Image (cartoon, rainbow, N blue to C red):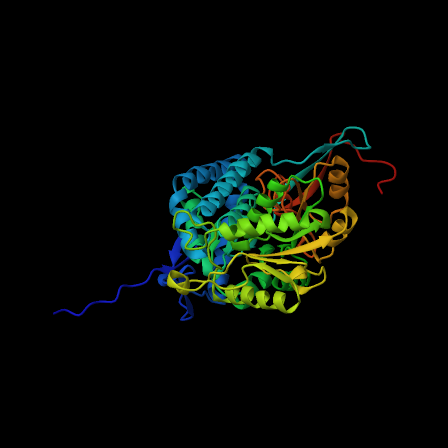
Length: 500
């Protein structure tokens, strides 16, 4: 009887110079489905510094021709990518759920947002211009133009492994840059699907490249390579701060979108049912693994008991499980490391004296034992300066902070180092606009969750959350271009007088 042969595991590959290649490195990591440890997604080889240099060289070589390609032609490729991604939505959503853990509905929503970004950025190709300006001198024409930087790097996280790469890559390409894309290692197979879409749309060889590897090797090479002119990063504050400082040493452009500790403020005249459902969605959607997730609910005392009771009742109804299974509302943490972090914060909250309303533990038994599942958790009577109220957990954990009135609510909402997103629930128009004026976040919502965004609207935070331009919308082009001022003197004569 012939011996059974072991089935070869899929391997994540690099995309360099228009070709899919395997790394020569012997270093690799195994990626398993976070909802089912028996399901091996594949093996991810970690690229070397030399292979990263080769990707940069390929991008540098491709830059002149891509720069000289008319912007409208570049936009047509993005428009085609939007159509291809639409056709492949279910395929991409399936690997996203299998690799990252979010529900299929959430994965399809992420893919749809990516399609919207591509569609919008394709249109920006027809609006990629500067402005004409009056000149002090007669017969002089002054105007500005936007020009590409050259080779740029896009370093993206695991929590939105389709949308975030797309909303960085699309404006970079339409502006005329060539790109090195470094996805999070644990979502490399999803990253490959993103590249396959652009490849099928006709992006020329070398214009878009993908390299998977460690930050200490691949990331460091991208930050230090003289041909890389800019880096757009989304991830933790610790890494983002280090990259920003590193980039400053050689005056490169660095864009960082980092952590969040987003508050929803609920005052006396709020629509209670709406506030409860929206907070539930913001806190536990995507297992709380969103930079815009609702992690704090700042609630006025007069309605706090009702709000907490209704929210806890709804949280207990959420079905936790494998995101690929119909009817599941919340999936697992993305991996063992993030799971451990969430469990540690559950214990921190208990030790800090907060009231555990619901949840507070990992889920066990049956299929739960093969995944990284946590109960949706609500802590009440959380002190504003406690760790669970100040530090980003990135899990399904909500802190309720009780306050006496609107002024205290605003103070508590601003009492963190982060400044990404916020929300207020009220029908008082004066409170609405006072909140908008004074809340220290880059995004704010009125009577809607802290999560969500649209392709045509700028995205990004203030304070410790973001630095170096906004993403999405028409302003996304600004980071990936240099603005050049042009003076055309058509008098044909020597200029006289003060020339400054």
